[in-house]
Length: 187
Image: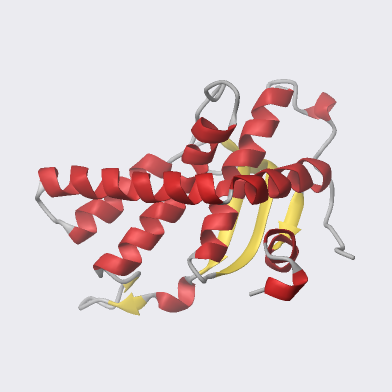
């Protein structure tokens, strides 16, 4: 049996977030979580619920992969993720899997799309193809297609994780792994 963490806060404390937005956030974060596991990365947690995210804004969802160990120092000592094509393509697919899940799995377009995912995808494209806007555009389209294929292949699993998020608010990586990959296939 899976032990889940705390449930989302009562709706009366969050009057600006509709049920439809909660479901959209759950689908979005579940898309990221499944993409993380498919990439072979460890997932720390995925959650929906209010959390300050800077500049006076509040996020209603977050997915935390454990990929910091992949960072390496650059010439100035700043810790950066690899700039190689394969890592950036997998990371861009992970980044775009959230919004792609919303557009592919929700009956209607998201009520209030509000994520920085496209900004991160553009950063990945700039890292792989610095100064080449045409190749950056093609890279983002390719990664978006990768995300669409992933979402279509794992649609049932994404919806299962989203339902668990709506019920429990926060899931550990082990809990998501158990939901996505049955015991006999657990990665």
